[in-house]
Length: 107
Image (cartoon, rainbow, N blue to C red):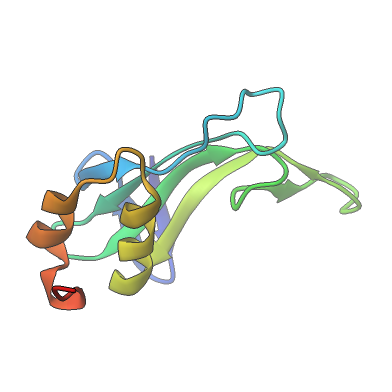
């Protein structure tokens, strides 16, 4: 998937896939989501994927009165990317240490 968002091109073909971020819900569930967290070659973070009408990828239908499934790219800050990684299953501490070590500290 390749999208232009706020003057920047985000491309899943050239970015590094970090982890899956979708849900385990089936496509019949309004909360289904197939998505992943990516990091661009320039170090920018984004989520790309598709999802049902109760997800971050939902799109308004033709008359604007309801929502349907959609797809897209959502740019993230490093802090938002850390949250995506923490919520991913299975959680991978090596990924955090490799990409976002400056945002975490020992307990």
